[in-house]
Image 1 (cartoon, protein in one colour):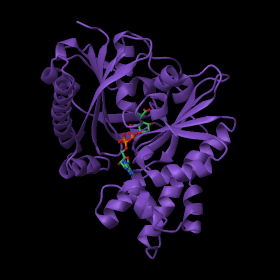
Image 2 (cartoon, protein in one colour):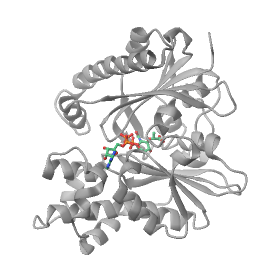
Image 3 (cartoon, rainbow, N blue to C red):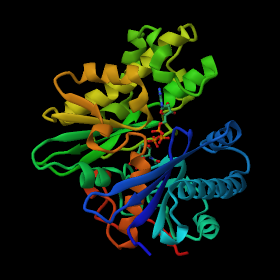
Length: 366
Ligand SMILES: Nc1ncnc2c1ncn2[C@@H]1O[C@H](COP(=O)(O)OP(=O)(O)OP(=O)(O)O)[C@@H](O)[C@H]1O
Ligand SMILES: CC(=O)N[C@H]1[C@@H]2OC[C@@H](O2)[C@@H](O)[C@@H]1O[C@H](C)C(=O)O
């Protein structure tokens, strides 16, 4: 049995589907051996979205969805293993993020809920599962998010260069890796979440491919200014957010109803770009290199605008550092599982605001 093989499963706030990564930690630099993506169908996406809000019989619906998700996670693991030719017996553990449906990190009543039945996943796969990564950090006074900056530090930290890693998923978050300062990371605000929702509502497409639709619109300056004035954007870190704040109701509260949909889309794209760029200029003006990952990295218009907003800095995708932008988070959850199995902390208190380093997650032994 090789004890270096782990699987990471990420199903993120975009609700697009399940990313699964097979990772080998046998060498000083972890390597991504195989990947697999399982798309969510519309019905599942709608059921998950509904659980982001208060509604009837939530506990029952959440439990059923947790079981359904774990069956899909198991299918995705099976797909990954058969694609790679690796046996489940050779996998030390799965790190399963689960599906966030509530993230309320503020106050002494803080909590974060990721759906997914880890016990069932372990039964279905015969593999040890590590899950519920965020609760321990929150119990220690942290935000419980973002957690991936610790992994960024391990694979991208540089002795001389100040690097920023930007993840543009449903929510956008950044990590500062400076040779002179501790690692800092936080959520900047919406990545694709608002653009996706608006695009679906007005075009029927799940997302604006390459930003082509946004490109046909013009930014609405008053709307952009009003959105940028929202207090979350100027809060100091540590901070994290989710669909509780950035959702269609939030956007609609700023609209008069007469705006052209394509102009709103252009404005939303600019909002994502500006909130990321302003976070970097405000907190890390000296950073030299910016590396982008997450699905937003595949939006050419978004990346072009980000390059303009960060002119003077070198902006690339994490692909150039050897990690495919699409697989960063699944890769990271394989690493987080390894930390837990080895009884090593996975959080960074300077990022999340926790009182100290903690071993994250719960282990469901095979
Ligand atoms: N070619 C593309 N053009 C435009 N947008 C794209 C493209 N490919 C992916 N995306 C965007 O990326 C999103 C998926 O990104 P990703 O998988 O990183 O999100 P996530 O992991 O669910 O989110 P989070 O990191 O917040 O948990 C899609 O919903 C879409 O908005
Ligand atoms: C509560 C939650 O699921 N947060 C996600 C979300 O998606 C991006 C951003 O907001 C980040 O804070 C986090 O995910 C990644 C995996 C993280 O913890 O680093």
